[in-house]
Amino acid sequence: MEITSNRARELLNQRGLHLLAEAGHGGSARVDPLKALGAADIPMGEFWNHRKNWVTKEAACAAHIYGKQIVNAEAFTGWQNWQDGPAGYKRLLDIALCAGLNQVTFHTFAHNPPEAGLPGYAYHAGEHFNVNSTWWHQAGPMVEDMSRCCHLLQQGLFVADVCAYYGDNAPNLVPARRIAPTIESQWSKDKCAHCGRPKPVDLDSLGYSYDYDYINEDVILNRMKFQDGKFVFPDGMS
Image (cartoon, rainbow, N blue to C red; front, side, top):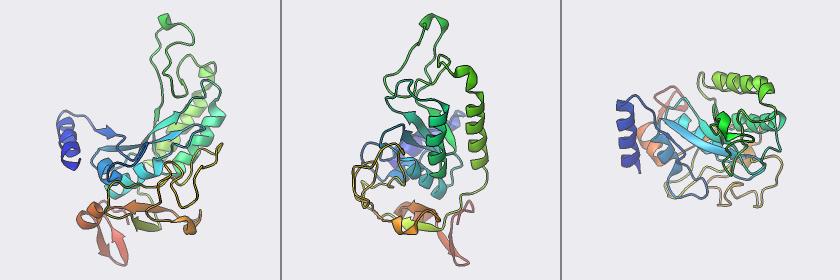
C-alpha cells in the first residue's frame, strides 16, 4: 500500500497535482489506515447526515502525525434528499471541525446546466447541494462561514494533549469520537461508533476537555523523537 500510494503521489506531484485519498477505514477497516492516509498529500475522511458514518478524526490524526496541512472529508453524505438546509449543515460541520476537519468536499455538488431542468441532475446519495437548491441564493453566509472556519483551522499546528499508539496490527482504525447528533450509536462505548469494531485504545476517560491523536508504528520509528519532555515531529507538532 505504501509503495503504491507513494509512487502514485510522486507521479502526480511531478505534474503539479496532489493526491487526495479517502484511504481510511471507511465501511470497515482493511489496512493500517493512518499509514495509508499518510501516503496521500491530502488525507480524506467522511461525515454523513443522519447516519453513523463518521471517520473525520482518523484523517485528522493522519494529517497531524505525517505533517499534512489539509484535512479533507466527504461531507454531508446521506439520503435526506432536500429535507435539510444551512442550519442543519452548520450543526454537522461544527462537529466535524472539532474532529479536525479543515477542508470540505460536498457530497455531492452535481454540475447542472440549464437544460437539466429542475431539480436537475442528482446523485442518489448526498445533500444535492447545488445551484438548483431552493435556498441557493441565500447560501452565501453559510458558505462564507465554512470557508472562514476552514481557512483559520489550516493555520498553525494542532494542539493535542495525548498521543495514543494504536498497535501495529492491520486492519486497524481510529474510532469516531462523535457521529451525527440525530442518531444513537448501535454499539457499546468500547466499540467504534462508526463501524462497531473494538477501540484499539479507549480514550473516553479523557473527557471533552482534552484532545488526542492516534499514532502508528511507522510514525514512531521514522518521525517521532523525544525532546524536552515531549514527543515531537519534524514539522513542529508535539
